[in-house]
Image (cartoon, rainbow, N blue to C red; front, top):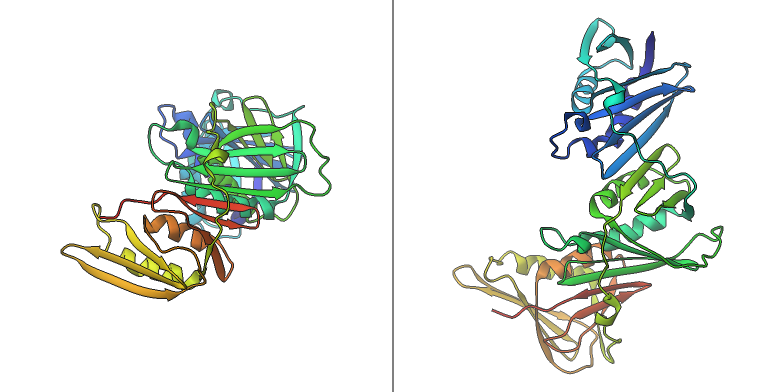
Length: 366
């Protein structure tokens, strides 16, 4: 039985499922993908038991076959070939890969050894716009906690209520929260849904939705959720635990806002960051009437100062911030001018922009 496939389409299909197979594991079967042929479709499934990715490719042949193969080895071989098409053939415990005058074989594993993929049938389904969800992920994913010891903050908190969806993340030093309307063809929800999506699943989702223009379906189960992008599905276990009551940490809008050219501010922070050192990381911001002084002094390295014209009529204030916390948000905001709420040296800086709130805690100046 020979299976003829377009090589580039096959590589693209396998790339979509690579992430779960590269996780560190003591189970060799998890470094493989389960490949099924049936109903004129090729189905590829990869899992690390927490994250499962299933992707489909329509084929011209009506074949029934199933096997497991090392994804990294299979991909490496396909990338080194140059032909437009490749032919796959199963023979006992081997997968033969042929094209033109080249022939290779890989060991395959009994598909019965592969973990049973999760299913999300008969669950609540919510319609989402890939474009809007991609924007929300961009504005919230950089604030996720990375490291040990804060499990509930190692993902993005999702709240869905009535006709709104909100994503919130925090690493304890900053917080991002963005709210958007659900698509107009999504019926209003009667009950509030909340869950924490692991960061690993968010990263894979953001890659896939860049290529999708069709409506995305969010399927909600008890301890897991799925994202259905027609030809690819992502199913992930949810993070257990209670996300902090973050809203109580967001201060009311300041009476006087600092309005500043985003690109000028970002460029100044980048220049100041050049002089950063582990024990001297904070950048000083001195705000006065219509002026902002950005400065940085690091012993044995040097000093930096730059004055920027701003729109500000509040009290004079001096603040210290991790420059990365400001640069990260300035990179994703697209407006030419940003508006910042400033309070006092002990309180956070807050950026509010069209349903988006970003909060960054100050640092002690050194």
